[in-house]
Amino acid sequence: MSYTQENFQDWIFYIDDKMDTFTKDFAQENNLVLDYSLKSLNDLEQWILKTYQDEDELIEDHETLDLLAIYIGETFRKHIGGKWFMDTENKKNAFYMMPVLTSPEFKGVKYKSPVTYATASIDRQEGNYISTILKNNMQDMAIPVKE
Image (cartoon, rainbow, N blue to C red; front, top):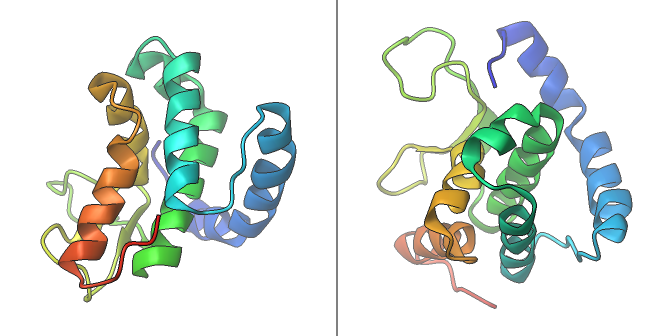
């Protein structure tokens, strides 16, 4: 996924609409409860593992990867804050031209990359990889973890 600054602003503008459809229609079609909880991240990750053989297959499914990234990112935002950001200047940034979350409040890693969490979950084959990242961030920020 690569964006220009202009279409990144459009992407942000449509997050609410995309998530409304994703958390209702997509969730219903796939028997998922997408309520931005830690459990929902595990359920969604299980769906990813059942649906995609490898990360390349998910990467090729641009629309679904986009929706997964937004949902994962919005779930992180609800628990640890942050804002969507895209680095359009530093070509050496590993997340150059990718939507990420960032905040001065984040501990450790400056950028949280929902796209890479979604694709890496396939390699990890854990079923709770994404929620574990969120829990670790919450603990680092002294935010109580409620399952």
